[in-house]
Length: 248
View (cartoon, rainbow, N blue to C red):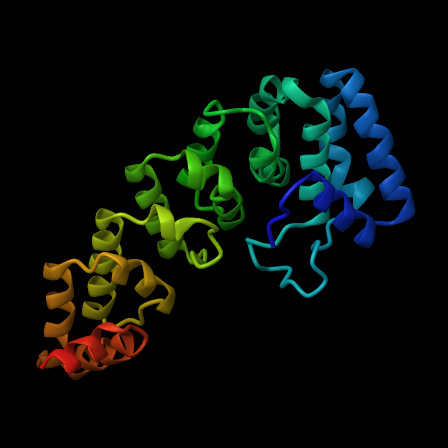
């Protein structure tokens, strides 16, 4: 669940946070609007004051894509700073713990920071923290990362187990190289007799790479049964096998 704007974010917080938490967030937002430097002391306190539950009561709390109350609270504090947000996010990210860093990353689509926060996104993607990686790959990253960086980020998600299907706008940013990289990954998984995440296929099928697809199909005739079965399982989740059979 990705809040579309500040109003939506406030509404979600009001539905889930306590009255005391909402009052604290409102008062603190007003304080940082007058004195942006005050956010340094307020930022670590958001989880304690506002809460850490998921914004969506039906969301899996272990889903790294799920927004939490403290994510929303930190985003709203940064929004309250206005045009000064870009001056604060670097220090908040560098000196914050994982939760505070995630809050900065969640807030980026709502802030007037242009390309200045791209280094923070790239730093988060280099980690193996699935919560940070999922937070980094929000609408800001989908819009601002160049093709090569985004393709590497998507591949990193697949490697570490962060779902790519919730990445809003990914379809429009898919490139032939991204499709090739994921097809190569799928072939490596099959050759290792392992399952392929079904969600990679829509990306691969947008620009099917001929060489990698043929390598995957060749696994259907491999002398090792486990590899044949891995290929069969993988291709059941794609449209490629049906398309190939229709053309025969």
